[in-house]
Length: 353
Ligand SMILES: C[S@@+](CC[C@H](N)C(=O)[O-])C[C@H]1O[C@@H](n2cnc3c(N)ncnc32)[C@H](O)[C@@H]1O
Image 1 (cartoon, protein in one colour):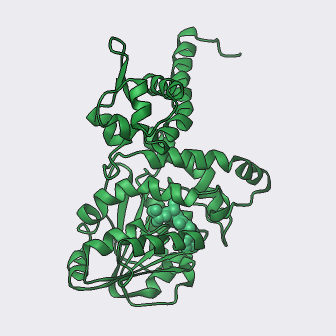
Image 2 (cartoon, helix red, strand yellow; image 1 turned 180 degrees about the vertical axis):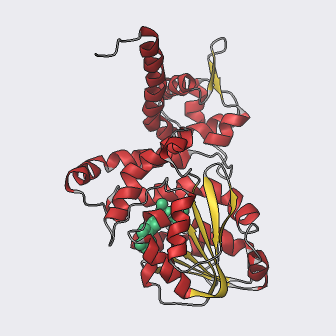
Image 3 (cartoon, rainbow, N blue to C red; image 1 turned 60 degrees about the horizontal axis):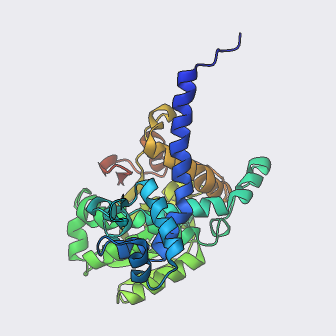
Protein backbone atom coordinates (compact mmCIF):
# COMPACT_ATOMS: atom_id res chain seq x y z
CA UNK A 1 0.00 0.00 0.00
CA UNK A 2 1.35 3.44 -0.89
CA UNK A 3 2.41 5.49 2.13
CA UNK A 4 0.00 8.34 2.93
CA UNK A 5 1.34 11.84 2.39
CA UNK A 6 1.94 13.61 5.67
CA UNK A 7 1.34 17.35 5.18
CA UNK A 8 3.44 18.36 8.16
CA UNK A 9 6.39 16.29 7.04
CA UNK A 10 6.04 17.65 3.52
CA UNK A 11 6.02 21.24 4.79
CA UNK A 12 9.04 20.60 6.98
CA UNK A 13 10.91 19.07 4.07
CA UNK A 14 10.05 21.89 1.66
CA UNK A 15 11.13 24.34 4.35
CA UNK A 16 14.50 22.61 4.53
CA UNK A 17 14.77 22.65 0.73
CA UNK A 18 14.03 26.37 0.68
CA UNK A 19 16.97 26.99 2.99
CA UNK A 20 19.22 24.69 0.96
CA UNK A 21 18.28 26.26 -2.37
CA UNK A 22 18.77 29.76 -0.96
CA UNK A 23 22.26 28.69 0.10
CA UNK A 24 22.96 27.28 -3.35
CA UNK A 25 21.73 30.49 -5.01
CA UNK A 26 24.05 32.53 -2.84
CA UNK A 27 27.09 30.94 -4.49
CA UNK A 28 27.42 33.28 -7.50
CA UNK A 29 26.52 36.44 -5.59
CA UNK A 30 28.88 35.64 -2.73
CA UNK A 31 31.68 34.95 -5.24
CA UNK A 32 31.02 38.34 -6.82
CA UNK A 33 31.23 39.90 -3.37
CA UNK A 34 34.68 38.39 -2.82
CA UNK A 35 35.96 39.28 -6.28
CA UNK A 36 34.62 42.84 -6.29
CA UNK A 37 35.85 43.52 -2.77
CA UNK A 38 32.36 44.23 -1.46
CA UNK A 39 32.66 42.23 1.76
CA UNK A 40 36.02 43.88 2.48
CA UNK A 41 34.64 47.33 1.73
CA UNK A 42 31.78 46.72 4.15
CA UNK A 43 34.23 45.63 6.85
CA UNK A 44 35.42 49.27 6.94
CA UNK A 45 32.07 50.25 8.50
CA UNK A 46 28.32 50.46 7.83
CA UNK A 47 27.39 51.92 4.46
CA UNK A 48 24.47 52.70 2.22
CA UNK A 49 24.47 50.95 -1.14
CA UNK A 50 25.81 54.14 -2.75
CA UNK A 51 28.61 54.48 -0.20
CA UNK A 52 29.49 50.82 -0.57
CA UNK A 53 29.56 51.10 -4.36
CA UNK A 54 31.94 54.05 -4.11
CA UNK A 55 34.08 52.37 -1.44
CA UNK A 56 34.49 49.28 -3.63
CA UNK A 57 36.08 51.39 -6.32
CA UNK A 58 33.17 52.97 -8.19
CA UNK A 59 30.75 50.11 -8.87
CA UNK A 60 27.21 50.67 -10.12
CA UNK A 61 24.96 51.50 -7.19
CA UNK A 62 21.91 49.66 -8.48
CA UNK A 63 23.82 46.37 -8.68
CA UNK A 64 25.42 46.91 -5.29
CA UNK A 65 22.04 47.62 -3.71
CA UNK A 66 20.52 44.42 -5.04
CA UNK A 67 23.64 42.47 -4.03
CA UNK A 68 23.52 43.96 -0.52
CA UNK A 69 19.88 43.02 -0.11
CA UNK A 70 20.65 39.52 -1.35
CA UNK A 71 23.50 39.13 1.16
CA UNK A 72 21.27 40.49 3.92
CA UNK A 73 18.59 37.96 3.02
CA UNK A 74 21.33 35.30 3.04
CA UNK A 75 22.27 36.41 6.55
CA UNK A 76 25.83 37.07 5.36
CA UNK A 77 25.60 40.81 6.15
CA UNK A 78 23.01 42.93 7.99
CA UNK A 79 20.44 45.45 6.77
CA UNK A 80 19.19 48.36 8.85
CA UNK A 81 15.88 49.49 7.32
CA UNK A 82 15.76 52.72 9.35
CA UNK A 83 19.01 54.10 7.96
CA UNK A 84 18.97 52.07 4.71
CA UNK A 85 22.50 50.93 5.50
CA UNK A 86 24.33 47.63 5.51
CA UNK A 87 26.95 46.29 7.90
CA UNK A 88 29.04 43.21 8.56
CA UNK A 89 29.54 41.85 12.08
CA UNK A 90 32.93 40.63 13.39
CA UNK A 91 31.66 37.03 13.15
CA UNK A 92 30.48 37.47 9.56
CA UNK A 93 33.81 39.12 8.73
CA UNK A 94 35.67 36.03 10.00
CA UNK A 95 33.93 34.06 7.25
CA UNK A 96 34.00 36.65 4.45
CA UNK A 97 36.96 38.99 5.08
CA UNK A 98 39.66 37.60 7.36
CA UNK A 99 41.80 35.45 5.06
CA UNK A 100 43.75 33.73 7.83
CA UNK A 101 40.72 32.97 9.99
CA UNK A 102 40.03 29.26 10.37
CA UNK A 103 36.51 29.83 9.03
CA UNK A 104 37.31 31.97 5.98
CA UNK A 105 35.04 30.32 3.41
CA UNK A 106 35.87 31.92 0.07
CA UNK A 107 37.49 28.69 -1.08
CA UNK A 108 34.31 26.73 -0.34
CA UNK A 109 32.32 28.97 -2.67
CA UNK A 110 35.02 28.60 -5.34
CA UNK A 111 34.99 24.83 -4.96
CA UNK A 112 31.22 24.68 -5.46
CA UNK A 113 31.56 26.71 -8.67
CA UNK A 114 34.29 24.34 -9.89
CA UNK A 115 32.04 21.35 -9.16
CA UNK A 116 29.24 22.86 -11.22
CA UNK A 117 31.63 23.69 -14.08
CA UNK A 118 32.68 20.03 -14.39
CA UNK A 119 29.15 18.65 -14.09
CA UNK A 120 28.84 17.42 -17.70
CA UNK A 121 32.16 15.56 -17.49
CA UNK A 122 31.15 13.76 -14.31
CA UNK A 123 27.72 12.97 -15.77
CA UNK A 124 29.45 11.17 -18.63
CA UNK A 125 31.50 9.18 -16.09
CA UNK A 126 28.33 7.93 -14.43
CA UNK A 127 27.54 6.30 -17.81
CA UNK A 128 30.97 5.03 -18.84
CA UNK A 129 32.51 4.34 -15.41
CA UNK A 130 35.68 6.22 -16.27
CA UNK A 131 37.21 9.11 -14.36
CA UNK A 132 38.11 12.75 -14.88
CA UNK A 133 41.76 13.79 -14.87
CA UNK A 134 42.54 16.18 -12.01
CA UNK A 135 43.53 18.89 -14.50
CA UNK A 136 40.43 18.44 -16.66
CA UNK A 137 37.72 19.00 -14.05
CA UNK A 138 37.22 22.75 -14.21
CA UNK A 139 39.25 25.76 -15.23
CA UNK A 140 40.68 26.21 -11.79
CA UNK A 141 39.72 23.33 -9.56
CA UNK A 142 43.28 23.33 -8.26
CA UNK A 143 43.15 27.01 -7.21
CA UNK A 144 39.74 26.46 -5.59
CA UNK A 145 41.02 23.40 -3.73
CA UNK A 146 44.05 25.28 -2.47
CA UNK A 147 41.85 28.12 -1.26
CA UNK A 148 39.35 25.70 0.32
CA UNK A 149 41.92 23.94 2.49
CA UNK A 150 44.23 26.89 3.24
CA UNK A 151 42.37 28.32 6.29
CA UNK A 152 42.49 24.95 8.04
CA UNK A 153 46.17 24.51 7.23
CA UNK A 154 47.17 28.05 8.32
CA UNK A 155 45.62 27.42 11.71
CA UNK A 156 46.49 23.76 12.29
CA UNK A 157 49.56 22.33 10.55
CA UNK A 158 52.25 24.05 12.58
CA UNK A 159 50.22 24.71 15.73
CA UNK A 160 48.60 21.31 16.19
CA UNK A 161 49.22 18.64 13.57
CA UNK A 162 53.03 18.44 13.46
CA UNK A 163 53.37 18.75 17.27
CA UNK A 164 50.96 15.82 17.61
CA UNK A 165 53.48 13.50 15.90
CA UNK A 166 56.04 11.60 17.97
CA UNK A 167 59.35 13.49 17.95
CA UNK A 168 58.82 15.05 14.51
CA UNK A 169 58.80 18.69 15.61
CA UNK A 170 62.27 18.24 17.15
CA UNK A 171 63.62 16.69 13.97
CA UNK A 172 62.28 19.57 11.89
CA UNK A 173 63.65 22.18 14.29
CA UNK A 174 67.12 20.66 14.06
CA UNK A 175 66.89 20.17 10.30
CA UNK A 176 65.08 17.38 8.47
CA UNK A 177 64.03 16.54 4.95
CA UNK A 178 60.32 16.60 4.18
CA UNK A 179 58.27 15.46 1.20
CA UNK A 180 54.80 16.95 0.83
CA UNK A 181 53.16 14.51 -1.57
CA UNK A 182 50.08 15.63 -3.54
CA UNK A 183 50.97 19.16 -2.49
CA UNK A 184 48.70 20.97 -4.96
CA UNK A 185 49.53 24.67 -5.05
CA UNK A 186 51.89 24.22 -2.10
CA UNK A 187 50.27 26.15 0.76
CA UNK A 188 50.94 23.29 3.18
CA UNK A 189 54.58 22.95 2.05
CA UNK A 190 55.27 26.67 2.47
CA UNK A 191 53.61 26.87 5.88
CA UNK A 192 55.87 24.08 7.12
CA UNK A 193 58.93 25.64 5.49
CA UNK A 194 58.27 29.02 7.11
CA UNK A 195 57.96 27.40 10.53
CA UNK A 196 61.05 25.18 10.27
CA UNK A 197 63.87 27.22 8.72
CA UNK A 198 66.52 24.49 9.28
CA UNK A 199 64.63 21.90 7.25
CA UNK A 200 64.33 21.26 3.52
CA UNK A 201 61.09 20.60 1.73
CA UNK A 202 60.08 19.08 -1.59
CA UNK A 203 56.48 19.29 -2.73
CA UNK A 204 55.40 16.67 -5.28
CA UNK A 205 52.24 16.66 -7.34
CA UNK A 206 51.40 15.02 -10.65
CA UNK A 207 49.57 18.16 -11.87
CA UNK A 208 51.99 20.49 -13.66
CA UNK A 209 49.95 23.74 -13.35
CA UNK A 210 49.64 23.19 -9.58
CA UNK A 211 53.39 22.73 -9.31
CA UNK A 212 54.03 25.87 -11.36
CA UNK A 213 51.69 27.83 -9.09
CA UNK A 214 53.44 26.37 -6.03
CA UNK A 215 56.82 27.47 -7.41
CA UNK A 216 55.47 31.01 -7.87
CA UNK A 217 54.24 30.97 -4.25
CA UNK A 218 57.64 29.78 -3.02
CA UNK A 219 59.44 32.52 -4.94
CA UNK A 220 57.09 35.22 -3.68
CA UNK A 221 57.72 34.08 -0.08
CA UNK A 222 61.49 34.03 -0.65
CA UNK A 223 61.60 30.32 0.15
CA UNK A 224 62.91 28.89 -3.11
CA UNK A 225 66.30 28.08 -1.55
CA UNK A 226 64.81 25.50 0.85
CA UNK A 227 61.63 24.52 -0.94
CA UNK A 228 61.43 22.75 -4.27
CA UNK A 229 58.38 21.64 -6.17
CA UNK A 230 58.46 18.77 -8.63
CA UNK A 231 55.99 17.18 -10.97
CA UNK A 232 55.70 13.51 -9.99
CA UNK A 233 52.99 10.97 -9.30
CA UNK A 234 53.24 9.69 -5.74
CA UNK A 235 54.47 6.26 -6.81
CA UNK A 236 57.11 7.74 -9.12
CA UNK A 237 59.04 9.80 -6.59
CA UNK A 238 62.69 8.75 -6.90
CA UNK A 239 64.25 10.65 -3.98
CA UNK A 240 64.54 8.71 -0.72
CA UNK A 241 65.50 9.26 2.90
CA UNK A 242 62.70 11.59 4.00
CA UNK A 243 62.34 12.17 7.74
CA UNK A 244 58.74 13.17 7.24
CA UNK A 245 56.29 12.60 4.41
CA UNK A 246 53.05 14.55 4.53
CA UNK A 247 49.90 13.97 2.51
CA UNK A 248 47.22 16.56 2.96
CA UNK A 249 43.73 15.61 1.80
CA UNK A 250 44.95 13.61 -1.16
CA UNK A 251 45.55 9.92 -0.37
CA UNK A 252 41.90 9.09 -1.06
CA UNK A 253 42.16 10.93 -4.44
CA UNK A 254 44.91 8.64 -5.65
CA UNK A 255 44.13 5.73 -7.93
CA UNK A 256 46.30 3.27 -6.04
CA UNK A 257 46.49 4.39 -2.39
CA UNK A 258 47.81 1.00 -1.28
CA UNK A 259 50.58 1.14 -3.90
CA UNK A 260 51.33 4.71 -2.78
CA UNK A 261 51.54 3.54 0.84
CA UNK A 262 54.11 0.90 -0.14
CA UNK A 263 56.10 3.52 -2.03
CA UNK A 264 56.01 5.97 0.90
CA UNK A 265 57.44 3.17 3.05
CA UNK A 266 60.29 2.78 0.51
CA UNK A 267 61.19 6.47 0.32
CA UNK A 268 61.03 7.24 4.07
CA UNK A 269 64.26 7.28 6.05
CA UNK A 270 64.44 4.54 8.65
CA UNK A 271 62.59 5.85 11.70
CA UNK A 272 60.78 8.38 9.49
CA UNK A 273 57.12 9.32 9.82
CA UNK A 274 54.30 9.49 7.31
CA UNK A 275 51.55 11.95 8.27
CA UNK A 276 48.27 11.35 6.47
CA UNK A 277 45.72 14.12 6.79
CA UNK A 278 42.28 13.07 5.61
CA UNK A 279 38.71 14.29 6.01
CA UNK A 280 37.43 13.50 9.50
CA UNK A 281 34.87 10.90 8.50
CA UNK A 282 33.35 8.10 10.51
CA UNK A 283 33.72 4.48 9.42
CA UNK A 284 30.09 3.95 8.47
CA UNK A 285 28.08 6.02 5.98
CA UNK A 286 25.23 6.42 8.44
CA UNK A 287 27.55 8.18 10.90
CA UNK A 288 28.54 10.64 8.15
CA UNK A 289 24.99 11.87 7.62
CA UNK A 290 25.76 15.28 9.08
CA UNK A 291 26.62 18.72 7.65
CA UNK A 292 30.34 17.99 7.24
CA UNK A 293 29.68 14.56 5.75
CA UNK A 294 27.16 16.12 3.41
CA UNK A 295 29.75 18.55 2.03
CA UNK A 296 32.40 15.87 1.64
CA UNK A 297 30.08 13.31 0.02
CA UNK A 298 29.02 15.90 -2.55
CA UNK A 299 32.60 16.96 -3.25
CA UNK A 300 33.66 13.33 -3.36
CA UNK A 301 31.04 12.47 -5.97
CA UNK A 302 32.10 15.32 -8.21
CA UNK A 303 35.87 15.45 -7.56
CA UNK A 304 37.52 12.69 -5.49
CA UNK A 305 35.91 9.58 -6.97
CA UNK A 306 36.36 10.70 -10.62
CA UNK A 307 39.97 11.72 -9.88
CA UNK A 308 40.82 8.31 -8.49
CA UNK A 309 38.92 6.39 -11.17
CA UNK A 310 40.98 8.20 -13.81
CA UNK A 311 44.17 6.60 -12.44
CA UNK A 312 45.61 3.08 -12.39
CA UNK A 313 43.76 0.68 -10.06
CA UNK A 314 41.01 3.26 -9.48
CA UNK A 315 40.43 2.39 -5.83
CA UNK A 316 38.06 5.36 -5.47
CA UNK A 317 38.15 5.39 -1.67
CA UNK A 318 36.10 8.58 -1.58
CA UNK A 319 36.60 11.52 0.74
CA UNK A 320 34.64 9.78 3.49
CA UNK A 321 36.75 6.62 3.61
CA UNK A 322 37.08 6.77 7.40
CA UNK A 323 39.88 5.74 9.73
CA UNK A 324 39.42 1.98 9.55
CA UNK A 325 39.76 1.78 5.74
CA UNK A 326 42.59 4.31 5.69
CA UNK A 327 44.46 2.38 8.37
CA UNK A 328 44.06 -0.83 6.37
CA UNK A 329 45.53 0.85 3.27
CA UNK A 330 48.42 2.36 5.22
CA UNK A 331 49.14 -0.96 6.95
CA UNK A 332 49.17 -2.74 3.58
CA UNK A 333 52.16 -0.55 2.65
CA UNK A 334 54.25 -2.07 5.45
CA UNK A 335 53.60 0.42 8.26
CA UNK A 336 53.13 -1.25 11.62
CA UNK A 337 52.46 1.66 13.98
CA UNK A 338 49.45 3.69 12.92
CA UNK A 339 47.46 5.97 15.18
CA UNK A 340 45.14 8.95 15.05
CA UNK A 341 47.55 11.60 16.31
CA UNK A 342 44.98 14.39 16.45
CA UNK A 343 41.89 15.70 14.72
CA UNK A 344 39.89 18.81 14.01
CA UNK A 345 36.28 19.28 12.96
CA UNK A 346 37.14 18.64 9.31
CA UNK A 347 40.32 16.55 9.38
CA UNK A 348 41.89 13.57 11.10
CA UNK A 349 45.66 13.27 11.31
CA UNK A 350 47.05 9.75 11.08
CA UNK A 351 50.65 9.04 12.01
CA UNK A 352 52.27 6.02 10.38
CA UNK A 353 55.70 4.59 11.16
C1 LIG B 1 42.25 17.54 -2.97
S1 LIG B 1 43.78 17.99 -3.69
C2 LIG B 1 44.75 18.43 -2.29
C3 LIG B 1 45.91 19.28 -2.67
C4 LIG B 1 46.76 19.79 -1.51
N1 LIG B 1 47.37 18.72 -0.75
C5 LIG B 1 45.91 20.63 -0.61
O1 LIG B 1 45.56 20.16 0.46
O2 LIG B 1 45.56 21.76 -0.99
C6 LIG B 1 44.44 16.46 -4.22
C7 LIG B 1 45.81 16.59 -4.85
O3 LIG B 1 46.32 15.30 -5.11
C8 LIG B 1 47.00 15.32 -6.33
N2 LIG B 1 47.06 13.92 -6.78
C9 LIG B 1 46.04 13.08 -7.03
N3 LIG B 1 46.50 11.88 -7.37
C10 LIG B 1 47.85 11.95 -7.34
C11 LIG B 1 48.90 11.02 -7.57
N4 LIG B 1 48.64 9.77 -7.91
N5 LIG B 1 50.18 11.44 -7.43
C12 LIG B 1 50.45 12.72 -7.07
N6 LIG B 1 49.51 13.65 -6.84
C13 LIG B 1 48.22 13.26 -6.97
C14 LIG B 1 46.18 16.25 -7.21
O4 LIG B 1 46.91 16.75 -8.28
C15 LIG B 1 45.81 17.31 -6.19
O5 LIG B 1 46.75 18.34 -6.16
